[in-house]
Length: 80
Image 1 (cartoon, rainbow, N blue to C red):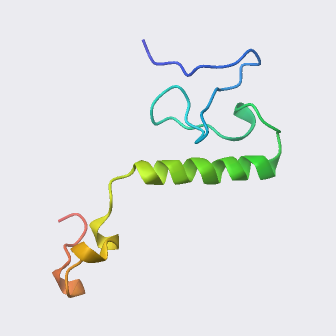
Image 2 (cartoon, one colour):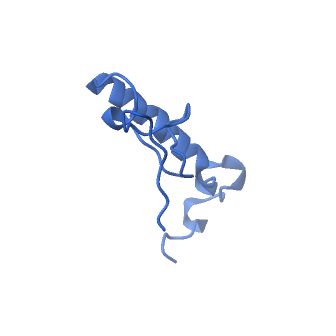
């Protein structure tokens, strides 16, 4: 059986403070969650969820100065 995200009595998805549903890694924003149905609210939700998703990603060594090569030529080419 496929997982089903929890909903409230109004059939809106229940989310935590970072807008993650009861399914790990599934985020919801805008009119499908319990909040004001306004574009500005949805945009704010998107920023919160995007930040939470970004923080879950593994660190990118190219953004970490301590792990960068001395010269750009020493960096591997994506896909290699």
